[in-house]
Image 1 (cartoon, rainbow, N blue to C red):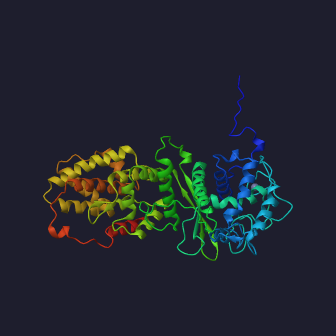
Image 2: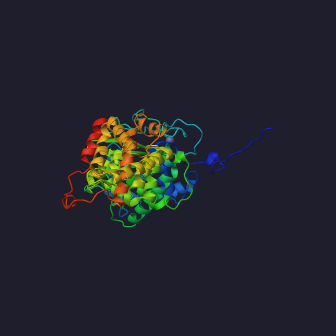
Image 3: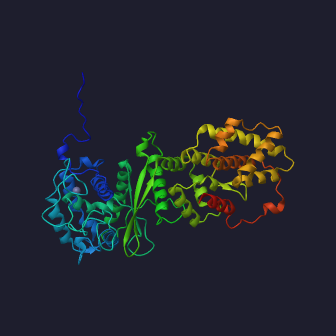
Length: 484
Ligand SMILES: [Zn+2]
């Protein structure tokens, strides 16, 4: 006979839950911000008292000196996300208006239920006493701003909870410091199945903001995980660079000591990037899938310096780092970027390249082992050869010509080296689209052996060779040609 089981999710009294994550990035960032602000770990534990305390405290974050002088950087948020001005900033910012605004919506907040007419959360009924406008919910304008919620128009149906929560958005949203001026050029909301990440970042944002709010005259900046410029190069105002910096921060502060692996569905992240174009704002959504999530976190945990070298590139230029961040987050093929063909060197390390092949390219362990076995034999062949440099050059040039690659292997085979049997060869080199990956990994294996034990003595002029402008240019250009 079957048994009836009861599951309680966090709080037993479902009917008393005031706030929860609802799936909308703005609301969820605000919920994380509010939860962190009152020092709780789970939004479902928020009480009426928590909410009232946080609302009472709110004016001191928005205004300087307990007056009506707005902490101006925060005005940037209203200018970007809302149509020009949030209600209580317009036409003149006023603490009284903020307090009146809070009171107006506070009394209409009821606990969440299973359904409701609010088109943002669907868990409470929409306000009917007044029209909600683009001054109250971010990115809902039909004017100059991009309408993130495309089904909304001024006067749309939103509940008092969603409207009021937006005041806590500054505690759950990230923005790298702008060079000058008060408005950041980009805001970011990491969002995903794993709400812990949002809560961690919100807790740190609250800590950061609270410290500054204690100084009554300070302009409060938005929080952004800083201090990772040395690991992740490039400009943090580029979303992909910002995303990798957030990862570096999470790994350093939260993920490195954790022995509990997150379940696969939690090892993904969507990042909403709200980009200010001066005239308007637009939202770009970046999805970090599990393979990329795993590669980046593992690389940051165990190969930090090597990842840094790989991303910085041969000349340690910031622009190169920006380009690499864009390509990494876009999921472009980057195994060839580990190869510095000109200097026969590896950018990063062989281990990092293998991690990339495994996680991002989904290369099976057996295949990697077969390539390593092949590298052992080709290495012996090169070592024994009278002209190892010439032979290696031939191999390097086969990348765009599989027929030449076969000819090279036949020569190795005829010279008496046991390279691959037919099964192994077809596993490694003839599967559609995979032979280039295999050749790149073979070269990485050979170069790593060459670094330990050079195949030939370098002539003095070779060693003096000047750094070329872009050492891997010929390689990467060819790669782009055939992959476009
Ligand atoms: Zn709602």
